[in-house]
Image 1 (spheres, one colour):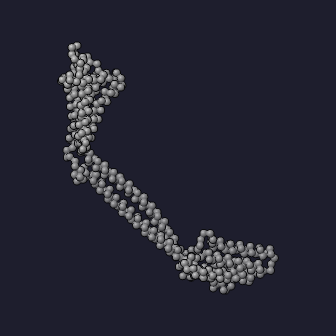
Image 2 (cartoon, rainbow, N blue to C red):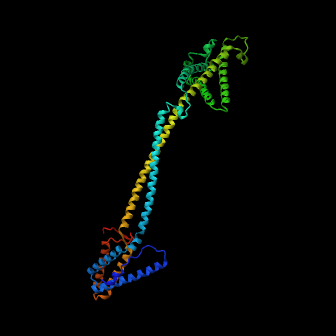
Image 3 (cartoon, one colour):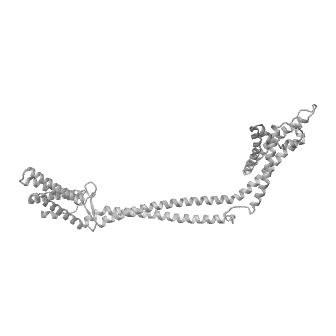
Length: 424
């Protein structure tokens, strides 16, 4: 090989340089070196008579010398490794962010665990000491609640019986006596309604629940501070009017049953003057008021008991939310761990490139092709061989060139540079 060629192995930067003058000088120098490689290939080919075996050895020597210079040129290696140094620093910064985020998530899990433990303690202690948690619960709510409930059940049963019997007597019954007690409490009211039709049965059996619905509304309206009493008063008037209608219809049937021909027609003044009329009203309306008051008392006592239950449900809901949030944190930490593993892999990869040396593939390929070009042209011009033999020799040399590039893993399309570890 031409000895001048050994002096030309200087690694040139492959990155863009900001200084335009330096770039121009660099390009001029590269062109000059390329020309020298061309001339060296031309001369070596002429001396070797274009032999492809010698061409193979020359290519290996060119590659070995170039690689050796690459390894020794620390300044140029530093430039070539700079992108990997920057990539490593960027990945280290990303790793710090990921580890910080994971620490925040782990701290969040510890806080959630403390909150869950506190809720578990509160769930045990709130039943024994509700005042500690700001719950104004009566010490004797259960006894009062059950006493009120015990009174409410028979009163409810009385109202159901009364309104079924009274509504049947008022709207459907044909009287055969003038007994007001039998009119109000007809033992066969439900049986007779069932025999008559299902509509009649539905009507008389749902009337009691309409009154109870009014009683429930009274309880709800009493909770309203501004308009509650007005609404309760309006409901009581409605209930009283409905009871008055029932009493008027029943008293009308009783009056018509035992009136004489000379008696006047039944009207409101007559109804108001009869004690049975008021007896029917108060048999329903007064008991209804009692039922409403007892119902309101029972509901308030139940709400008193329910304060602790509501507080417990609230704690359980908070615990569920904390557990769900904890799971989200755990999932996030697992994802971050995967990202950290990937980032560490990138850092290791960048460090391996930094620890090795960078082989400027593009630059070598340029020299390689210039040297090969000089070799081929020398074969074509300097050898006195038939054209066919020259072409065959050039083809063999070209095959040697391709095998050389394949042997050393050169790929023009994928890599600007090739990284070698220290072990190579």
